[in-house]
Image (tube, rainbow, N blue to C red):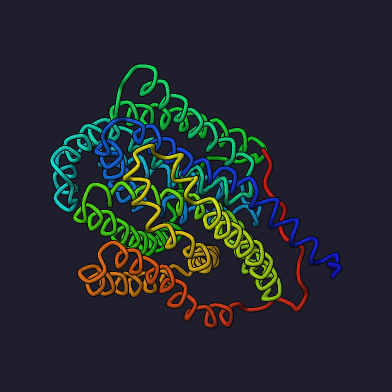
Length: 455
């Protein structure tokens, strides 16, 4: 069927935003894949387990501050659309200031965070000892990581997807190179993986600040202290950030619990689940590119007060997202065992991972709807609904794992995770009709999508 000019416009706009973000996103799990693969070719599966445990601790810690990215995007997009140069600067400065304070606090409080984190992780003494080495090195990158989150959110808000791609490729590409150099070249183990990440985080921060400065050079204006400290705007930022923090906290509790319960099932199950989660994460980062695109476009549509533009952005991006999800389901179904073999040459570990592979085959088609809905609600800054839906979904996961794991072991754990992903879509989808009704229309025409920022 031939597409209308309007449909072609929306498909082009979605791909212009999504493709660079997808490429930047998949560099993140590619890094995790290299970490796991390098450890997987060492003689003891404890190395994989240690990186998995250390990685999930930092994912839990940093993703809890994901609001610095997600909460920044909507406000930056609004300032960009309003062509308000001073507020555009303020939407960058506010989250950077907050990120700096939080990052320094994490470093100072590491003596409290470390024992608390490992209290909730179930792993062997050897795995925990190696994971502590990883933690003690990587914790020093907290300020760089959190400030970079704010920079990424701001760049997405102004539609500068190519800059996001450049920043992420440099961050993760340098990390991979240093990872291979330190582990394969210098004979380091988990300490080499952690050091590579630390160096890359600060390199990315430096590059991100340069990119942001160049982007702002096209927008003459002032760094206005009064605008920066505007009470109403600060209040809105804190409200959105608090909602997203609670939502992300619940999400990380689910994955933290998944890894912790994996450790209770044994080192092989922990290592196998780490590999399979890497595969799922790779898919998630790719499909999430369309969720990021819909964040920008739904925000623009709401700013323009057009339900028609809102629906067009959602429809077009969801078609692409669902297609990508189907692609990954087929990819994992036909090549999953070969992918597992790339991660490790330990035969018992390969066999264990292959046993639970069907869950990863099914997850893309279960997960894609929750990713899209997250993007829609972030773009609309309806973060209260996101918070409430995630709390309900976490309850589903906790109940399901409590009932299923004692009877079905690791299969029960994967079923609980699948129910969690499906529950996220169902619970957040229940809030969607009210979101559509809340959009007050300026007119009935569909405005052309706003163009991306440059530089």
